[in-house]
Image (tube, rainbow, N blue to C red):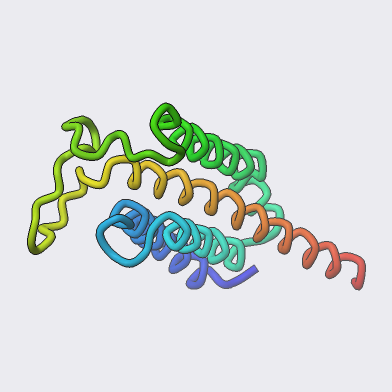
Length: 155
């Protein structure tokens, strides 16, 4: 277990890491980044909390079932979005220029950075971000479990 200063700073930084990760996911169709990069940043926040706290406290705060559920929801929503345009073509961007959610037409020239554009791409970025968050979070928890198990066996 780390000192109280490290735990306080980890709690403080965790909030900003989450916000930054969701920012990367939300702006993935406008800027470099997207679902995978944003999900990896959010999973890094989980790794920061894992390093700062005791094993038992981490098991209580971060449940593996929540992360595996998030992984499944992300994967399922990606597949549903990909199959939703199957009547025309696989991965067809049926939301683009429709006027619905994320269906605002993209203006020509310099991109003003409207989030309500790009059709199904933001939905897929969000799905990939949730899936990567769940997958990498589970990997971090398994790594913690085996490291702590090894320490207990060696002691």
